[in-house]
Length: 280
Image (tube, rainbow, N blue to C red):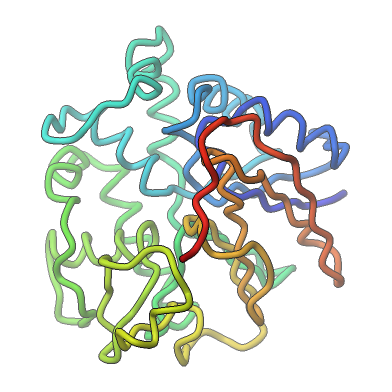
């Protein structure tokens, strides 16, 4: 039995099939951990969503910001853009079944045996593992409850930017959601910064730190697998593993075998004709 973590698919279903062929994925024996953003921007979001759902217990996925964007559209939030790729899902006959399934996915998955956490964007360095799981559960409970439509209508926004245990209501849920699905940089006071999303070369000039380089309360034996950051070079940053190869931008779709002591990476090239976004 093998476990593979896979970076942002974003509707690149053809590349996903090629990647699974490359790793010789056997749904009867192996497990896939998707780091979120199954959909949007790529040409085959509907096929991707149907396929991952069809894998049942052979696959798990955490929610990414694009997945939440799709769910917000499903719940009638009208102030946001509807891409052609997402429109195909919203018009599909199995829309209800697919999006009900997606809405039940977690923000964070922790595997005790392999001491591994799967999230889309990251874990705030002020949160230990127990707290991170509890806070993810707060949002998941709302997503799966009767107030989910209210949540989606209040989900968007960059504030509050600084964590406090005293945060309540929509502000608390928005901050937690932003950490798990949008976070990249923190400033010197550990505020979330959304103005920079590409280069690692200039962040020091702005007093910014990638979230995974900040002093963390996370237990030292825990590995974190994440996506979201397509301009961050794929690879290992200590115990943090960046898996978004920017497939939808012309890069690669990436898998990492998790149950090996040694790193075992797999890549397939994108068929997308969009230019690769490089760090500047």
